[in-house]
Length: 257
Image (cartoon, rainbow, N blue to C red; front, side, top):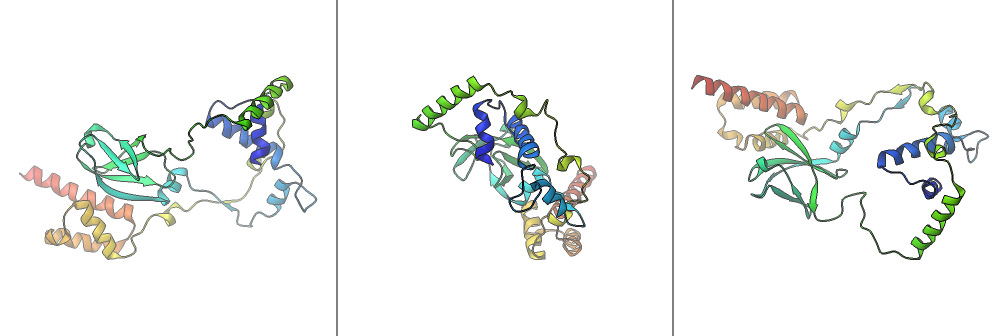
């Protein structure tokens, strides 16, 4: 499929990634999905629709959640030059974070770095040096394959394929999966919330958040922590309630003072 679709780029080259994705979607809907199934007497799309589960297909999660599932928060101290190194790649964050301890939100599918500081998320911050990011490539020297591609490109210009064949602007689309009512199961994002494996791990994360051992907390604060980890082990809920509890207590103390 990749080779068949990218051959059309010899006729017209997409200007942006978004345009390339739009052309790819059009190719999938109007060409690939309508082709004959390899073993059944109907199209690939008809075969897929005939085998949709009775309960419907499961919706995908959004991209942010997908990245977060593969993201491991890491507490790091930013250098005095507002730079931080991640796996050999140097990132420059906001000047306000210089020499501060922040929480790096770095994931397997991220090309940018996000930073959490004082309960607020900042970014994205882009690499300024180091390895080439995912899906980006260095330009190589031209070879025989490039010369052959130039010949194909010149031939494509003479053939003059209309761009509408890629964009679908004047092509009557066959019924697609997006135009057919298909039962769906909503994605249960709550089921994929990160949960601490046990109370001890949750308490260690709370101590890391407060930057102090729990043994040094006052009795009422310690009781709050015990009650909290008994109610839930969901990371986002625990950290949000911890921040809210100690922020209110600090505000009350400042007011009393």
